[in-house]
Length: 86
Image (cartoon, rainbow, N blue to C red):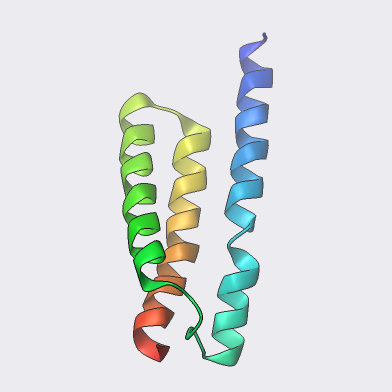
């Protein structure tokens, strides 16, 4: 398969999985409530995203780096609001 097509698939997947966090982040921000969000899940998720970002940087995988950098911001924001608002 063409390497460019493979990168496009990677960026498409990265876009979908990254955007998936936006509705939750917006809801928590608007309601100032994170009561129903699992603290453990978001702690583990942010750790996993950080490890994927490091892996992507070390392997030079642009879609992986872009997706995980942005997703860390979204999931990290949700985690921060969970700690702040409970």
